[in-house]
Image (cartoon, rainbow, N blue to C red; front, side, top):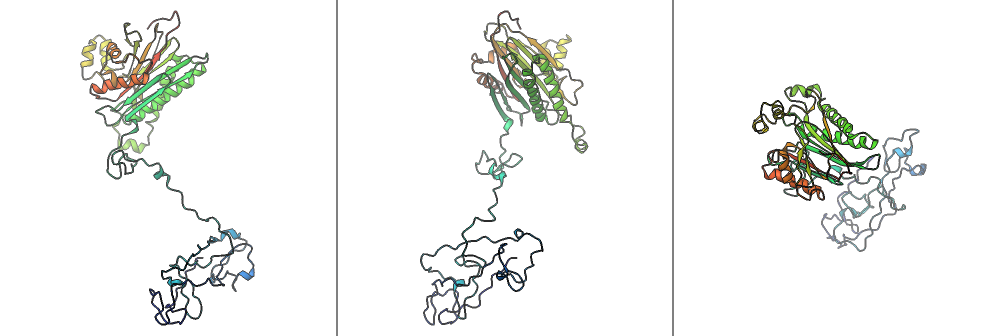
Length: 452
């Protein structure tokens, strides 16, 4: 139980007992120096509640001195349940202080209890016969949220809130997905928000793994969120991660790359479908929103074998290292324009000039009509580059020849640089959409390999 220090009565001179004012430094009656610090009294009160204290340390009611009226310790309760005040030793005084110390003045008739306002005098309950101990109540640890708080890129002073805005200047901060780059061995990818969209709804996964025969396999997955659906950025991220994990887990176990690609697309579909499992209340507030959806395209490169898989209108291009050989597009779009061309109702130029050209007929998501994963396997007869991209890039390099022209000649040696150049090509062309591209080198095949 805490004690309130007893207040001193009207101060008097310790020499002649004449009344003095609080600000006096000398007694007006006898001239006594009031700034001198009196010697510490010998009967300094001690407040202890240790288990070793005996009856002599307690008052008439069994309480320690100075704690009369405090509730007794419950029978059988351990002594540790009573808080013990920390032992603090006062700092030594090298010389008499010159400032007035009102609480240290001793009036006639004996010393009075020091006041809490005097920092130089120890408070009641302080022991002088014990060594100093560490504080029982250390300072609280700093708030981890402040330790990792992001600083505004504009004013460099304000903290960024959970919505991505500076609490100081209100500036919107760049999102992490606005620009993503990754290089995993010889495969690299770049994704950019573009110049017109307010966020990046594309995502990708690149990686490499070792096959049971000791050979290597390169993996690239690129996903494009469907903007007309809800949470397209979450859909593309979930699909890319699920497909990438499935491939990188199946290939080392000996699965055929084409079968592994099929299973990866199915896994990506399940991941996107799971995003639609929202509470009924959420659907009630937005009954007309489409379920999260995205497209997917991917490639697996092993020694002498190239496997591609897709759902939607993202594409894979083949560009030979020998630029004298013809490049090729390896996928067919699930789109209105592709259907018109395959049905012979329009030629390719007419179909893709139509405003309905980019309406997709296949995608990943709970609202999809039917999941139809497309896979194909090729055995190129020469080294080259595999370009895996969204329509944000191929809108500006639609033909295989245009894509080959935009690809740097040193793409095999510098795949990340090549991916940056291709993204830059789309941004220079207008950047109307998010842009994502992965660049995967295809090694020189063994003798007797087939052709694309």
